[in-house]
Image 1 (cartoon, rainbow, N blue to C red):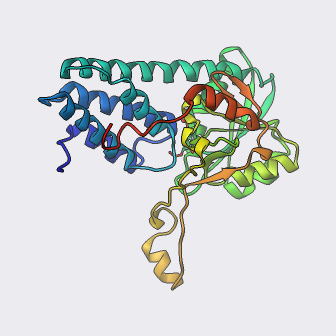
Image 2: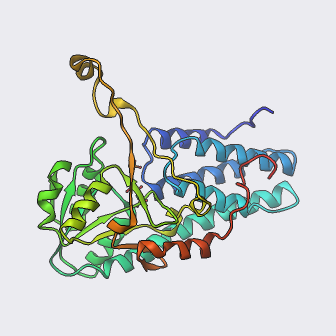
Length: 319
Ligand code: RUB
Protein backbone atom coordinates (compact mmCIF):
# COMPACT_ATOMS: atom_id res chain seq x y z
CA UNK A 1 0.00 0.00 0.00
CA UNK A 2 1.29 3.52 -0.85
CA UNK A 3 2.15 5.74 2.11
CA UNK A 4 -0.36 8.62 2.46
CA UNK A 5 0.75 12.18 1.65
CA UNK A 6 2.35 13.87 4.63
CA UNK A 7 1.99 17.53 5.52
CA UNK A 8 5.10 19.53 4.50
CA UNK A 9 5.47 20.85 8.06
CA UNK A 10 5.62 17.31 9.42
CA UNK A 11 8.24 16.39 6.83
CA UNK A 12 10.23 19.55 7.70
CA UNK A 13 10.08 18.69 11.40
CA UNK A 14 11.33 15.18 10.70
CA UNK A 15 14.26 16.58 8.72
CA UNK A 16 15.05 19.12 11.46
CA UNK A 17 15.11 16.34 14.08
CA UNK A 18 17.29 14.07 11.92
CA UNK A 19 19.73 16.90 11.25
CA UNK A 20 19.70 17.99 14.91
CA UNK A 21 18.41 21.51 14.25
CA UNK A 22 15.78 20.38 16.74
CA UNK A 23 17.53 18.38 19.45
CA UNK A 24 17.33 17.28 23.08
CA UNK A 25 14.75 14.72 24.13
CA UNK A 26 12.05 17.06 25.49
CA UNK A 27 12.34 19.48 22.59
CA UNK A 28 12.12 16.63 20.09
CA UNK A 29 8.95 15.34 21.80
CA UNK A 30 7.35 18.78 21.69
CA UNK A 31 8.21 19.25 18.00
CA UNK A 32 6.84 15.79 17.12
CA UNK A 33 3.56 16.52 18.91
CA UNK A 34 3.25 19.82 17.06
CA UNK A 35 3.93 18.09 13.72
CA UNK A 36 1.33 15.39 14.29
CA UNK A 37 -1.18 18.03 15.34
CA UNK A 38 -0.53 19.89 12.08
CA UNK A 39 -1.06 16.70 10.10
CA UNK A 40 -4.38 16.14 11.90
CA UNK A 41 -5.52 19.73 11.39
CA UNK A 42 -4.73 19.81 7.68
CA UNK A 43 -5.83 16.28 6.78
CA UNK A 44 -8.36 15.93 3.98
CA UNK A 45 -8.82 12.19 4.58
CA UNK A 46 -12.20 11.02 3.35
CA UNK A 47 -12.75 8.23 5.87
CA UNK A 48 -11.83 7.51 9.50
CA UNK A 49 -9.63 4.61 8.32
CA UNK A 50 -7.76 6.91 5.92
CA UNK A 51 -7.35 9.53 8.66
CA UNK A 52 -5.90 7.01 11.10
CA UNK A 53 -3.55 5.65 8.46
CA UNK A 54 -2.38 9.17 7.64
CA UNK A 55 -1.53 9.91 11.27
CA UNK A 56 0.19 6.55 11.67
CA UNK A 57 2.28 7.26 8.56
CA UNK A 58 3.18 10.68 9.99
CA UNK A 59 4.23 9.01 13.23
CA UNK A 60 6.38 6.47 11.36
CA UNK A 61 8.08 9.28 9.44
CA UNK A 62 8.90 11.10 12.69
CA UNK A 63 10.10 7.88 14.33
CA UNK A 64 12.44 7.28 11.42
CA UNK A 65 14.63 10.23 12.43
CA UNK A 66 16.62 9.40 15.57
CA UNK A 67 16.30 6.12 17.47
CA UNK A 68 17.43 6.78 21.04
CA UNK A 69 15.26 9.41 22.77
CA UNK A 70 12.12 7.60 23.95
CA UNK A 71 10.34 10.91 24.40
CA UNK A 72 9.71 10.81 20.64
CA UNK A 73 7.73 7.52 20.55
CA UNK A 74 6.15 8.41 23.90
CA UNK A 75 4.77 11.64 22.45
CA UNK A 76 3.35 9.81 19.43
CA UNK A 77 1.88 7.05 21.63
CA UNK A 78 0.22 9.65 23.84
CA UNK A 79 -1.52 11.33 20.93
CA UNK A 80 -2.42 8.27 18.84
CA UNK A 81 -3.85 6.35 21.82
CA UNK A 82 -6.20 9.29 22.45
CA UNK A 83 -7.27 9.61 18.80
CA UNK A 84 -10.71 8.06 19.23
CA UNK A 85 -13.94 8.71 17.36
CA UNK A 86 -16.35 7.46 14.70
CA UNK A 87 -15.96 10.28 12.18
CA UNK A 88 -13.01 12.11 10.67
CA UNK A 89 -14.00 15.26 12.57
CA UNK A 90 -14.15 13.42 15.90
CA UNK A 91 -10.76 11.83 15.24
CA UNK A 92 -9.27 15.14 14.19
CA UNK A 93 -10.51 16.89 17.34
CA UNK A 94 -9.25 14.07 19.55
CA UNK A 95 -5.79 14.11 17.93
CA UNK A 96 -5.50 17.89 18.26
CA UNK A 97 -6.64 17.79 21.90
CA UNK A 98 -4.20 14.94 22.63
CA UNK A 99 -1.29 16.83 21.10
CA UNK A 100 -2.10 20.00 23.00
CA UNK A 101 -2.52 18.12 26.26
CA UNK A 102 0.78 16.33 25.72
CA UNK A 103 2.65 19.59 25.15
CA UNK A 104 1.05 21.24 28.20
CA UNK A 105 2.00 18.27 30.34
CA UNK A 106 5.56 18.36 29.02
CA UNK A 107 5.88 21.96 30.06
CA UNK A 108 4.34 21.57 33.50
CA UNK A 109 6.34 18.37 34.14
CA UNK A 110 9.53 20.29 33.46
CA UNK A 111 8.50 23.03 35.90
CA UNK A 112 7.55 20.50 38.62
CA UNK A 113 10.77 18.55 38.11
CA UNK A 114 12.74 21.79 38.31
CA UNK A 115 11.26 22.56 41.73
CA UNK A 116 12.25 19.11 43.02
CA UNK A 117 15.77 19.23 41.54
CA UNK A 118 16.32 22.71 42.97
CA UNK A 119 15.81 21.33 46.48
CA UNK A 120 19.07 19.41 46.11
CA UNK A 121 21.05 22.61 45.62
CA UNK A 122 22.48 24.85 48.31
CA UNK A 123 23.87 28.34 48.28
CA UNK A 124 27.45 28.32 46.99
CA UNK A 125 27.26 24.90 45.28
CA UNK A 126 29.28 24.11 42.16
CA UNK A 127 27.71 21.82 39.58
CA UNK A 128 29.38 19.95 36.77
CA UNK A 129 27.33 19.64 33.55
CA UNK A 130 27.52 17.39 30.50
CA UNK A 131 25.76 18.17 27.19
CA UNK A 132 22.62 20.34 27.23
CA UNK A 133 19.41 19.32 28.93
CA UNK A 134 16.31 21.47 29.36
CA UNK A 135 15.24 19.27 32.31
CA UNK A 136 18.57 19.98 34.04
CA UNK A 137 18.34 23.69 33.25
CA UNK A 138 14.87 23.77 34.79
CA UNK A 139 16.37 22.66 38.16
CA UNK A 140 19.06 25.32 37.97
CA UNK A 141 16.64 28.04 36.86
CA UNK A 142 14.31 27.31 39.79
CA UNK A 143 17.21 27.40 42.25
CA UNK A 144 18.32 30.74 40.81
CA UNK A 145 14.76 32.12 41.10
CA UNK A 146 14.91 31.14 44.78
CA UNK A 147 18.07 33.22 45.11
CA UNK A 148 20.54 30.30 45.34
CA UNK A 149 24.04 31.29 44.24
CA UNK A 150 25.60 28.59 42.05
CA UNK A 151 28.63 28.16 39.85
CA UNK A 152 29.14 25.80 36.95
CA UNK A 153 31.77 23.67 35.31
CA UNK A 154 30.58 22.75 31.83
CA UNK A 155 32.01 19.97 29.70
CA UNK A 156 32.38 20.94 26.07
CA UNK A 157 30.68 17.66 24.99
CA UNK A 158 32.35 16.59 21.79
CA UNK A 159 31.66 16.12 18.98
CA UNK A 160 28.81 18.64 18.67
CA UNK A 161 29.67 20.86 21.64
CA UNK A 162 26.21 21.09 23.19
CA UNK A 163 28.11 22.25 26.31
CA UNK A 164 28.31 25.67 24.64
CA UNK A 165 24.50 25.95 24.72
CA UNK A 166 24.51 25.03 28.42
CA UNK A 167 27.28 27.55 29.12
CA UNK A 168 25.37 30.34 27.40
CA UNK A 169 22.07 29.57 29.12
CA UNK A 170 23.72 29.32 32.54
CA UNK A 171 25.49 32.62 32.27
CA UNK A 172 22.21 34.24 31.13
CA UNK A 173 20.67 33.27 34.48
CA UNK A 174 23.59 34.50 36.53
CA UNK A 175 25.61 31.30 36.96
CA UNK A 176 29.34 31.86 36.37
CA UNK A 177 30.68 29.19 34.00
CA UNK A 178 34.04 27.51 33.56
CA UNK A 179 34.12 25.63 30.25
CA UNK A 180 36.42 22.60 30.07
CA UNK A 181 37.31 19.96 27.46
CA UNK A 182 35.71 16.58 28.12
CA UNK A 183 38.96 14.95 29.18
CA UNK A 184 39.40 17.46 32.04
CA UNK A 185 36.26 16.35 33.92
CA UNK A 186 38.16 14.10 36.35
CA UNK A 187 40.35 16.97 37.47
CA UNK A 188 37.40 19.32 38.00
CA UNK A 189 35.20 16.82 39.82
CA UNK A 190 37.09 17.63 43.00
CA UNK A 191 35.59 21.11 42.83
CA UNK A 192 32.04 19.95 42.09
CA UNK A 193 29.32 19.35 44.71
CA UNK A 194 27.03 17.65 42.17
CA UNK A 195 26.97 16.32 38.63
CA UNK A 196 23.68 17.03 36.84
CA UNK A 197 22.82 15.31 33.54
CA UNK A 198 19.66 14.75 31.53
CA UNK A 199 18.39 11.57 29.89
CA UNK A 200 17.18 10.45 26.50
CA UNK A 201 15.78 7.22 27.89
CA UNK A 202 15.58 5.51 31.26
CA UNK A 203 15.19 1.74 31.19
CA UNK A 204 13.23 -0.54 33.51
CA UNK A 205 16.37 -1.50 35.46
CA UNK A 206 17.16 2.17 36.11
CA UNK A 207 19.92 2.52 33.52
CA UNK A 208 20.23 5.99 32.07
CA UNK A 209 20.77 6.51 28.35
CA UNK A 210 22.24 9.93 27.70
CA UNK A 211 24.83 11.78 25.62
CA UNK A 212 28.03 9.84 25.03
CA UNK A 213 30.46 10.48 27.89
CA UNK A 214 27.81 10.35 30.62
CA UNK A 215 28.88 6.89 31.73
CA UNK A 216 32.55 7.78 32.02
CA UNK A 217 31.63 10.91 33.96
CA UNK A 218 29.33 8.98 36.31
CA UNK A 219 31.93 6.30 37.03
CA UNK A 220 34.54 8.94 37.87
CA UNK A 221 32.03 10.92 39.95
CA UNK A 222 31.15 7.80 41.95
CA UNK A 223 34.84 7.17 42.62
CA UNK A 224 35.07 10.72 44.08
CA UNK A 225 31.73 10.44 45.95
CA UNK A 226 30.30 13.35 43.95
CA UNK A 227 26.54 12.77 43.68
CA UNK A 228 25.26 12.27 40.15
CA UNK A 229 21.73 13.43 39.56
CA UNK A 230 19.69 12.66 36.45
CA UNK A 231 16.92 15.15 35.67
CA UNK A 232 14.40 13.29 33.53
CA UNK A 233 10.68 13.85 33.33
CA UNK A 234 8.61 10.70 33.03
CA UNK A 235 8.30 11.03 29.25
CA UNK A 236 11.91 9.73 29.27
CA UNK A 237 10.87 6.39 30.79
CA UNK A 238 10.96 3.70 28.13
CA UNK A 239 7.94 1.39 28.53
CA UNK A 240 9.21 -1.12 25.96
CA UNK A 241 12.10 -2.00 28.30
CA UNK A 242 9.54 -3.48 30.72
CA UNK A 243 9.19 -6.35 28.27
CA UNK A 244 12.91 -6.74 27.65
CA UNK A 245 13.45 -4.46 24.66
CA UNK A 246 16.76 -2.64 24.59
CA UNK A 247 17.42 0.97 23.62
CA UNK A 248 19.06 1.50 20.26
CA UNK A 249 22.13 3.71 20.45
CA UNK A 250 22.28 6.11 17.54
CA UNK A 251 25.47 5.97 15.46
CA UNK A 252 26.07 9.30 13.74
CA UNK A 253 28.13 10.38 10.76
CA UNK A 254 31.91 10.21 11.10
CA UNK A 255 32.13 13.74 9.69
CA UNK A 256 31.08 15.00 13.13
CA UNK A 257 34.33 13.54 14.48
CA UNK A 258 36.87 14.06 11.72
CA UNK A 259 36.97 15.95 8.41
CA UNK A 260 37.63 14.07 5.17
CA UNK A 261 41.03 15.73 4.77
CA UNK A 262 42.10 14.85 8.32
CA UNK A 263 40.96 11.31 7.77
CA UNK A 264 42.75 10.98 4.44
CA UNK A 265 45.93 12.30 6.03
CA UNK A 266 45.82 9.58 8.68
CA UNK A 267 45.25 6.68 6.31
CA UNK A 268 43.08 3.59 6.59
CA UNK A 269 41.24 3.82 9.91
CA UNK A 270 37.75 3.14 11.20
CA UNK A 271 35.86 6.03 12.78
CA UNK A 272 32.85 5.41 15.01
CA UNK A 273 30.52 8.03 16.42
CA UNK A 274 27.98 6.67 18.93
CA UNK A 275 25.81 9.57 20.13
CA UNK A 276 24.74 8.06 23.46
CA UNK A 277 25.82 5.63 26.14
CA UNK A 278 24.22 3.68 28.97
CA UNK A 279 25.03 4.43 32.60
CA UNK A 280 24.13 1.53 34.92
CA UNK A 281 21.98 2.39 37.96
CA UNK A 282 24.81 1.78 40.45
CA UNK A 283 26.50 4.99 39.28
CA UNK A 284 23.42 7.19 39.63
CA UNK A 285 22.35 8.71 42.96
CA UNK A 286 18.90 9.94 42.00
CA UNK A 287 16.54 10.32 39.08
CA UNK A 288 14.55 13.51 39.51
CA UNK A 289 11.16 13.43 37.77
CA UNK A 290 8.03 15.57 38.05
CA UNK A 291 6.65 12.81 40.30
CA UNK A 292 9.48 13.08 42.80
CA UNK A 293 13.05 11.89 43.19
CA UNK A 294 13.74 8.16 42.84
CA UNK A 295 16.68 5.85 43.39
CA UNK A 296 17.25 4.44 39.88
CA UNK A 297 16.48 0.86 40.95
CA UNK A 298 12.93 1.85 41.95
CA UNK A 299 12.02 3.64 38.73
CA UNK A 300 10.45 0.42 37.44
CA UNK A 301 7.51 0.88 39.83
CA UNK A 302 6.77 4.34 38.46
CA UNK A 303 7.14 3.00 34.93
CA UNK A 304 4.59 0.24 35.59
CA UNK A 305 2.17 2.69 37.17
CA UNK A 306 2.40 5.14 34.27
CA UNK A 307 2.57 2.82 31.30
CA UNK A 308 1.27 -0.59 32.45
CA UNK A 309 1.32 -3.41 29.94
CA UNK A 310 1.96 -2.06 26.48
CA UNK A 311 -0.44 -2.98 23.70
CA UNK A 312 0.61 -3.08 20.06
CA UNK A 313 2.19 0.17 18.93
CA UNK A 314 -0.46 2.56 17.58
CA UNK A 315 1.50 3.31 14.39
CA UNK A 316 1.65 -0.33 13.34
CA UNK A 317 -0.69 -1.61 10.64
CA UNK A 318 -3.97 -3.03 11.95
CA UNK A 319 -4.43 -0.46 14.71
C1 RUB B 1 20.88 15.59 24.05
C2 RUB B 1 21.03 14.89 25.36
C3 RUB B 1 20.28 15.46 26.52
C4 RUB B 1 18.93 14.73 26.65
C5 RUB B 1 18.01 15.42 27.66
O1 RUB B 1 21.41 14.86 22.98
O2 RUB B 1 21.67 13.86 25.48
O3 RUB B 1 20.98 15.27 27.73
O4 RUB B 1 18.27 14.70 25.41
O5 RUB B 1 17.65 16.70 27.18
P1 RUB B 1 21.30 15.46 21.48
P2 RUB B 1 16.28 17.39 27.68
O6 RUB B 1 21.92 16.83 21.51
O7 RUB B 1 22.08 14.48 20.64
O8 RUB B 1 19.83 15.49 21.11
O9 RUB B 1 16.39 17.47 29.16
O10 RUB B 1 16.28 18.75 27.02
O11 RUB B 1 15.16 16.54 27.23
